[in-house]
Image 1 (cartoon, rainbow, N blue to C red):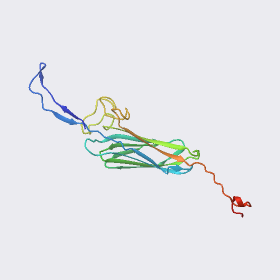
Image 2: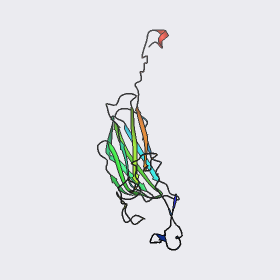
Image 3: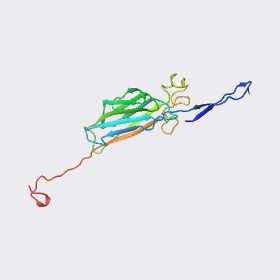
Image 4: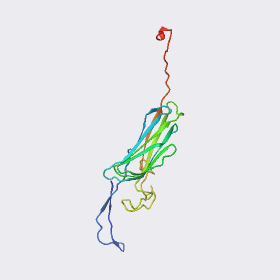
Amino acid sequence: GDTRTNRFQALVDGAQSGATSSGVDARIVEPSITDLSLSANPGTVDAGDTVSYTLTYSNPSGANRATAFDSVVSVPLPAGLTLDLGSVAVVAGGGAAGVTDNSAGNTVSIDLASVPPGGTVQVTFQATVDPSATPEQTLAATASLEYTSLPGSNGTTVNPTGSSTPGGSGTDTGERDGSDGVGGVDDYVDSDPASVVVRGITTLKSIVSTSEAHTGTSG
């Protein structure tokens, strides 16, 4: 939302010739994805159970918002869970486009070429709790998202500025990305954790029959 005012002067032999031009304002607009969410259901599991995960994020609409490009969201699953690669599904809404599923092994990885203001993304997938999971073990996963301010590593001539950046992504003369992390200048990142807990062992004792009146009903 910051505004930068541009003016120019004409110089002849180092001296200004004529008046300084009137100002032309340029307003800075950016994407802003801060609502990445990962949830797991059910929260308490046994070995062999299926865990269903839902991941969502959006680029909100409004003043001073721009398209998020080259977004990459990934969720590496911990030991104790096995990802069902065939269960990975993506729903892109609000103009979000260019879905690529790069999921492999035990990691979900989804790229989107562009998420415009008002764009939404939902990723669902399932995993199975391994027999090796131990009672009361916490199986924690974290979704991580990174995106950029321009398409490609230097922008392309089809972006709104009609030009490419001279520097690479994350440099002072390049597009913004997530290389500085939260709180930095290049802070186009977000993350969210989700955990499931393996059910603990419980001991159940019941009397089937007894000849002692003080211990229960005689059978």
